[in-house]
Image (tube, rainbow, N blue to C red; front, top):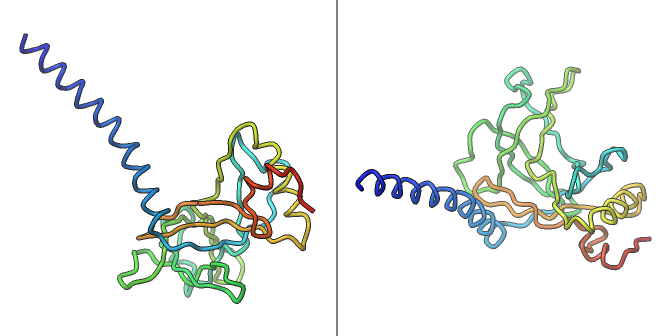
Length: 191
């Protein structure tokens, strides 16, 4: 009987751990969405042959590189902390990157370096951790068409709305001309 109780206790413990981990991830993301600072990141056109994979929009960002003092100090794939600045239009741009989390009060998020330029510039490219916007499966095809059309029209401004808190970043929405892509899919039109 003792063996059965031990197995039951282990089973219950494993079940609780399996529930706790995803619940913690959801709670942390909700905390960032509810209390984090909201930033707009301007998106850039995506290769039209692969803008979607499954049920999400693949996002690429216009301002995704930063100048560093010595590019030999940085490696592709390295985890970095991106400190933000706002451009004149109110869009978030990387101010600088650091190998350690900033100690003073500033908004930053964790990311990875895509590559270090091999030319004479001292620029490194950043892979933003919020490059997938998940959609309902039945709306994904229409969203793909709307997003692709907006990116081919120079007059349309598309951007991601991202909440940032303590190094964590959560993608909240994708907007085209200030309108949520979810609403545009419902309307099924864009100029």
